Image 1 (tube, one colour):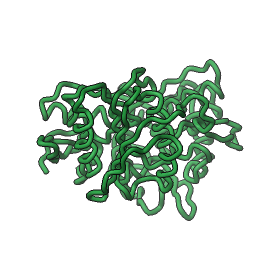
Image 2: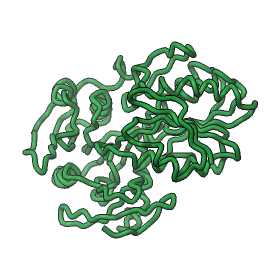
Image 3: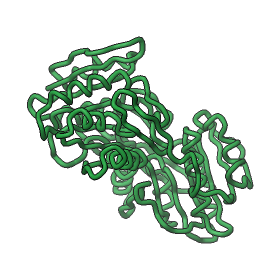
Length: 386
């Protein structure tokens, strides 16, 4: 598996996908040098079925392509690609260049395409609510007679995904499982996004009184997760000690509760939000408007620290430890690296993580000062500084 590029000082590995008579070299941004593939058997089958289904022409949409395999393999069909994750843009830039394919940019849920499609090719997400969101969107966007091809690795499909498909679309064909992957072909159903009561879910945080809501792809959108609950009192304490005008980054912000809490404790702070999920960024913008109407705050859809060259006095981080079925610390390591280079002198990072991930070892690679501030049976909170 050759190294062909680097990202944030970390080697990007390439591997080859051979499918439907073509060969593509693909990268997986953020893999931190690990041998994590940029495609799987579900991508292979979706490409094969999509090329067969698109033989008569028509407009094609690719939804939630993981690392560019679907978009690049179908590039001659001129697909419109839409993804929640900002990592797709980086993958398309690197892999597209290596394969001599003209630059292709992805839409996100912040500004989804307003068009009708004859074929929608979609990766089935792990979250059932997000699957419902995607199927309702497809019902809105499919043309008369248009078809949906949806696929994923069987072990990563939502437990009641069959019921979600039965409720929302007309399943025309279930293709035989192959290499532990499944693809289904569907016709659109009558129910779209308009009027869907489950589109937003949320809660009120009892300590701050903040009301937050989030779209379906956002982690812990309907309840306060355990790690954030442990970190939150320390966020409030650290925020109160900062001078007016200090800069705070809510990194991998999710619904934005940590950054909003810092703002509630010290309204004079300049708080910035960033997340790899466009639905998270949309949720933050909604929550900011709800809790601090008229208060401006920058929010970025990006894979890590925003590329603005700004330095921060405090970075708040509850890093994800899973990415499309892969569990590990590779996402957190990339965020630690970026955070360490984005602190002002004297700045601090507050990090919460699962005990079993051993962040006390990995954080030491980038931070000379590391202190455990809080812990329970499952989570640990650290203060880190250069």
